[in-house]
Length: 445
Image 1 (cartoon, helix red, strand yellow):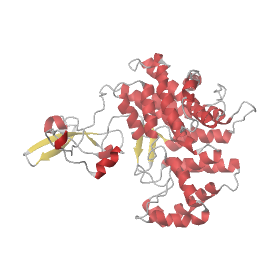
Image 2 (tube, one colour):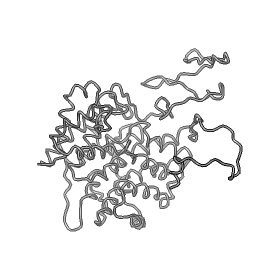
Image 3 (cartoon, helix red, strand yellow):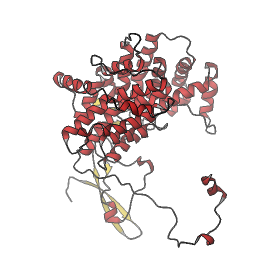
Image 4 (cartoon, helix red, strand yellow):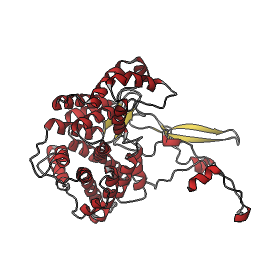
């Protein structure tokens, strides 16, 4: 064995065998056991529900240290990017690995701007949905349908087509999302405008109407831009892993991103900021906050404070600090008075940041808490919250998909399982089978 390699030794006490498992080290972060050949050599699988201790890939895009509260894209700290950069620049960084020069930035912005419209035939697809359909249901359908319209960018083996598909997805997502909103409220669609920035364009398509001129508020546009940056990528989360798994079968990029949107829609993932507003509505008034805080501390009470703590971050969510500042800027700009939910949110934030229980448990307000406040203050309906998440995350999804396709050791995803079902059984004729249990019978109703 080479001297410069590290190994862990696995002992099989039952058979007296031992197996050397190579140790891989990344640029930063914990070492990783390479179990690629474990089954071949030992006949053993590993068991890791949720893959919380398993690295599914190598990646150069995003690094997270949950204990230290660190989030970096291509080596750049998220706070630095959110304060100094813009979403188009971050998209370029995620896709290409470096911040763009002025010339590259202009070319990239032009490429995105030139792809913001969608094929007019897709309008008929929207009409197939009920008016009250959830916008995320529409997003899944419309994004998946893009592959039927853009055949010239579905060859995943062509680097040029991969890049065009990436540009199209980033560019069209705000248009698709805003159209889903307009359709749901019965207003005419607003087409994108080339003279507006990415975030300004989205707000214009959301709130402009043909009967009067709409002026985009620069403070709100900047807040949306930061929202997109802070949600642009988050390593191998559920939706990103879904995109990679779908892409591992060589599915076209539009289908892969549609799969990611479907995963993001889950309330345990992208629906967290939506859950924050629902929680505030449940609390109802400021004088009931202490009652609900006490309920949240009771292990036997099912109530949980949404928007506090994070599965990955055991420290302060680094995105939350930026979003907190932005939330207060938005509230000041809009000068909102007497909004009960926002008053509850601000009071809840103040109490939680000073409560010993929350401090000890490190249950700080996270990015979902503050983003929910921002979107609510802007007048964005609650069922659009996850759509905005999807728009920002598309940059990360296409970057992760592109990296996976270009990985020379790419394999189709095929997780193993620990089988705990019945062993071999003999087939019985229908008249000799036992009567099905009442519990199982319920499934047939």
